[in-house]
Length: 401
Image (cartoon, rainbow, N blue to C red; front, top):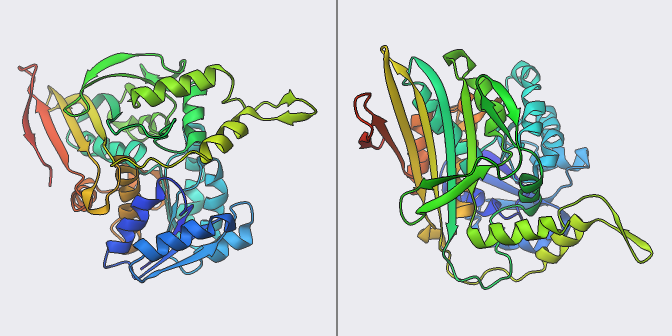
């Protein structure tokens, strides 16, 4: 199989590249990005490509170059910013290539799902939202929902800590543009069968995650899961769904301060004789920061709590994953837990393990058990626990494989 990784010079792409490079079924891999990333692409191909990787230059705003970069591929991993998802999908559809992205931050996800009939008509699949969240948590939701007759609520909690020595002023966990939108744009929750717009950082609650993440304060933020899961599980009676996140505390505080100063704004301000966009300045400045040199020590817990009924009795199911840096690749939890699921999904598409067709969120098309097994091969272990209707504690903790 042949896979193209678009945005291959980006922050989350290393996990995708390493997964595909070490998968024996992947015979050819193409790393594609802007020409100004030449040095990064060539180094990643040389260091990680396992002698089956080539590099090409592509611009998502230039359809001919984009289509040329993916030509002949079985699947494409879109690691660019979510703003470009629709353009990349158009190119994949034109070339007959299966597609995977890292999420559409609610509003783009809705636009993408509306294209499902076009993809189905071409016998192609676009997996909308893959990584840890969205991605792994969506498939966890599917696993739990499949074990219930009816579903009342799904609540997703994502807790992240970074215990590494901070040797850079701002240790950015993933794409800064996406993070700024999550901090500025109003999130949505699904409450009593309807979407409800709320404020960023609202709905704060303390969650006792397993060590080493520990107790964290999570809050509402705009995410793809909030757009897709209520649609996917409407037939099971889902009435309430939320996604809440806790980012590393030092980073969270610094970015909130920068946003409060107005540096997340895309509205031009006059500086001397020139109009300047504050967000562009912030992104440009942070791009010049030194890369963290400390050994990765970030950790994450993905938790999905699903409540419903089975055989007329109340049933709660908790599906959980604890993510750590991946020692074999000397890779932090961020790129590992986000990138590997993207690589795995591309492999499942190219091999025919994903049979559903259309532009679909992960929970609507990915079979959970094979997905969990491939993640476990990269040390991403899924566990499940059930709460008995007569017992307030979760019991029967096990691995679903």
